[in-house]
Image (cartoon, rainbow, N blue to C red):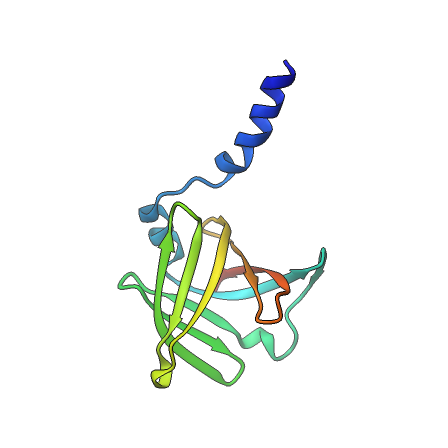
Length: 130
């Protein structure tokens, strides 16, 4: 019985988010806005300047990220085996990658974990823009 419990504990995280690339593409392709952020176990709503932030994913794998006054465009890709979303910024010829781990994706919420350049982990909870 002890071995079964350990096996179930090991399998649970895998079963909690098993979506194929096609399912992710179908759900993620829209514009998302921040609902709240979590860092160090502390949740906080978006600040006044973060409320205008947006992430847009297109079926053609185009991406647009609005961060305050800064708008960047590029491409996005999903690695099903690693559950990672990569957004490659191509604005003004700058090649910059933002990589997030996809923790949860439903029609009503997108949750990603992102490691900032300062090595701080940040969970971003996004909801569809209406």
